[in-house]
Structures are given as C-alpha cells and as structure tokens.
Length: 132
Image 1: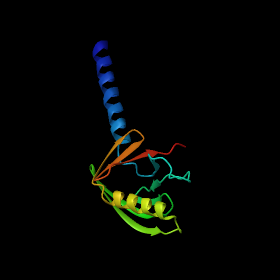
Image 2 (image 1 turned 180 degrees about the vertical axis):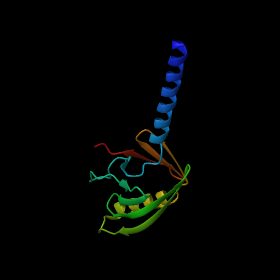
Image 3 (image 1 turned 60 degrees about the vertical axis):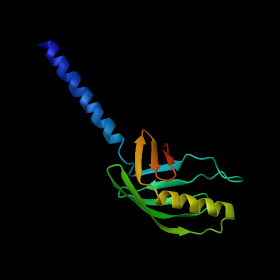
Image 4 (image 1 turned 90 degrees about the vertical axis):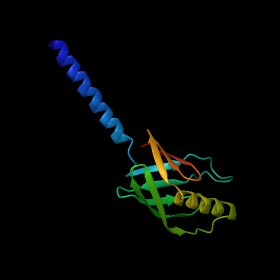
C-alpha cells in the first residue's frame, strides 16, 4: 500500500512539473526580449521588443523605434508593424532597421526554448528574454 501511494505521488509530481514546463514554454507575452545579434559598428545598441500582455509591441531597433502587434494561434504568429519613428538615422542603421521590421513582418511560426524565442520565416530571428 505504501509503495502504491509513493508511485501515485511520484506520477502526480511528474505530471504537475510537465504542465508547469509547458506553461513556461508559451509565447512570451508580458516580456522584454533582446535580439541575439552584435551591435552595429559605432554603436552599443541592440534591437529589443517589449511584448505586452495582449501582443502589443514596443520596438527599439538599431536606431529607429516604433510599435507593432503580435497575433498568435498555436505555433503560428503574425507580426503587424505599426508606426515606425524615423530618428535621423545613419543610412546603414536605417536600412538595417527596415530589414529587421520586414523580417518580423514575414515570420510565420515561433518556438520557445526557455528564455529564447525563435521567430521563423524567410529569416530566422532569435530573441532572448531580458533578465531582471
């Protein structure tokens, strides 16, 4: 009888832990994330996303900034860019910003492994959750 109780408790604990792990692997709403990239020459800035609880996004790019919206269903994701602020950027950074926004708009699916969100489309983008 004791062995049966231990087995039931062990199975229940494993199921509970796997449910928590699955919940943590969901789309990172309410999270700030930074693109896995090296800074542009002459800058320390790296693009980041602040994803709101309803998918609203505040973008800080290589130079420009703006807003957008994620819509997620299962592993499918759509990013709709909003107003992007032109901040008198050098041409190379402005082009890199435009390319990044276009890559975000072209993503089709996503996956998350721990603190890393991978957005998959013609170009794969990896964002890492910012630490506290």
